[in-house]
Image 1 (cartoon, rainbow, N blue to C red):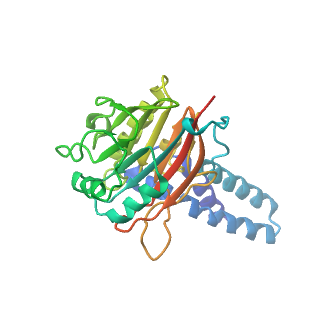
Image 2 (cartoon, rainbow, N blue to C red):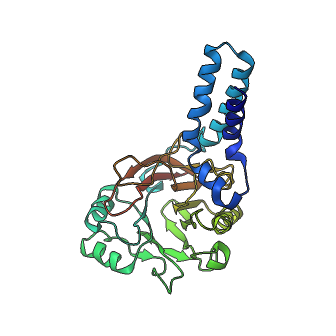
Image 3 (tube, rainbow, N blue to C red):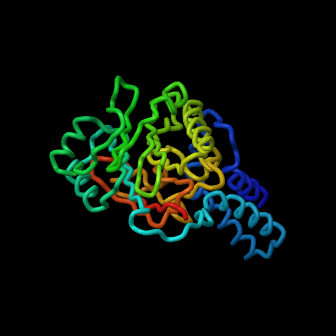
Length: 305
């Protein structure tokens, strides 16, 4: 039981390890919720054998490993009227290879006021426009790709002003990220389209991008903030949890898996997120689109009163 106890301890403390370990630790952390099955089985074995002390330790390790994955509650807010609501849709189109007809149908069905497309392209936007999916989106951030500097675009049905110097490529170590102040009926909302470098091959680059997003978001105090896109990070990554108090995630109490989609098995990990500060999240959903290995995620948010 000693080896099992040590393994249970390692799984329990895994979400708290803040160093990348040549990329191995972030990869293990991404699948840490599944690894929790191990201490759960060890706990059952210990209880059946009436090894109460060992069972107590394993229970502590199991709880420690579970807590980082749980969102206990969203910041409370009173229910507003229709004008105070915003619907967002965020989707990684996998190098613009997603099925445009299905994406257009999803846009019409969810009817977002703000649309964030990651790994997108101008030809894809032209296809969506030809399918009348971008009707009403009179405002947008800069084109993508723009000289290889950006692959994410924010579309809005409300006027927006882009903040082009907020999250540039020097900050993220990869693509620059679009940031825009959207003049919604309920007030100004600062929206950032997120695409963080994946923790494969260069975990330091992943860490830099994630830290840049976290540092920037924690500095925003004059307007409500929405971060939407592909974070390549999950709740069991301490860097992602560093968003801290005040941020609510659209996927509820337990993380919603969004990747890899379109396989013979369901998605395994939740790396696509919509998170908000200064707003209440009142609903969320995920959607599959052929041609991408990410699920699209949508959320409804309300201004707090």
